[in-house]
Amino acid sequence: MKLMIIEVIRGLGLGGAETLLYNRLRHATETNPAGFENTLVVNTLAEASFYSEKLRALGIPVIEIRPRDPLRGMIHLNRVLEALGRGCTTIYHSPVTTYLEKARRSMSRNHNGPLIEVVHSTRYRKIYLQMGRWLDRNADLAIAVSNDVAMAPTVSHFSHVRTLLAGADVGRMRAWVQQNPNAPQEFRLSKDIPAGHKLIVTVGSLIPLKGQKYAIQALLDPRLYDVTLALIGEGPEAGELMRLVERLGLSERVRFVGRVVDAWRWTAVADALVHPSYFEGLPVTLMEAAALGTPIVATNVGGVQEVFDKGARGKLITIPETALVADGLVDVLDSIPPICHAFSSRAEGESFWSLQRYTNEFYAMIGVKNGG
Image (cartoon, rainbow, N blue to C red; front, side, top):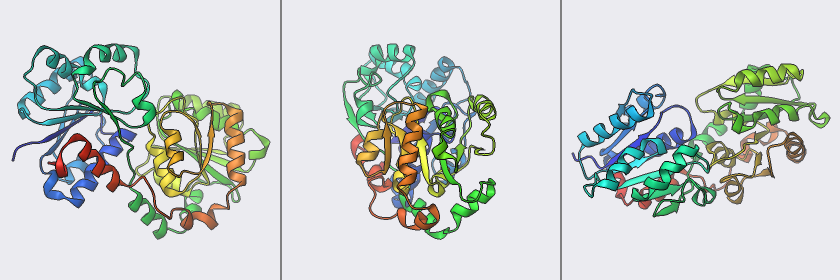
């Protein structure tokens, strides 16, 4: 059967873009299996491959590319795409994977098929922005994950740009909430969180731009004496954050959970989620919190405002700053009932962030009916 869609992504770990790709393809194959027999995924960073076997279990082939060096990886990717044949719709989820094909298109009218790039961020490295200035016009379409991204320098040189707000697995998450009414107590016991403490969580890679240090420092505010923070995720900033916790004497009130599958479960059982990031596209973590009814304290960057516009509860802050995070948490935590009373009821009602809506709009936008 002729291949119709190739999805190219740099890594299939537990990041936001990878999770979105997997959730969309899982939902698509469950609702219309025959329509997605013509889809293939190429992972250009084989070392990050959490979702690879999960995709194969859905019946979607995955090709893994080994070279970590971007240039060698692009050359290998180009050879793979050539071998798959012409006429395919190729969807790229990382800018670094696109440049060789865009350069080839600038020198030849003999194209492989539509080239679509999903842009997840308002900021790229300077070299990527420079390459985009010369090459992005050779793409057929850029899909921006939020209106803020659509107006950012990362998108400014594409000829055609459309915005599409993604979705979360609302049905699955809410079903878990209803089936596990004691989860808030069980999760707290699993990490020895003091009885009577409120639990706030951050979910995301432990890297400076996510601003987890401000959430940690906010715990020094005397108004938050009965709050414990759980950091869900891994990353190069972990050691520095652990040392910060020790210096501030907060070891009894901060938990480093690490990277976990279905991290949204921690969001579900938390009293609030805090996300003091420096910049964003449209964070999956916040979409999940909105769908679960978990209050949010977040920096107003990227598509975060759009999450609030679509029904999220909580507090927006202007910049990542300890005092602002503390004030936001106090406002939110003082205005909500204890999680043991609210857990099963707050994840109710209609949610904009459904996978059905997102999947339908995605395939309509790229002009591929029913995925193939």
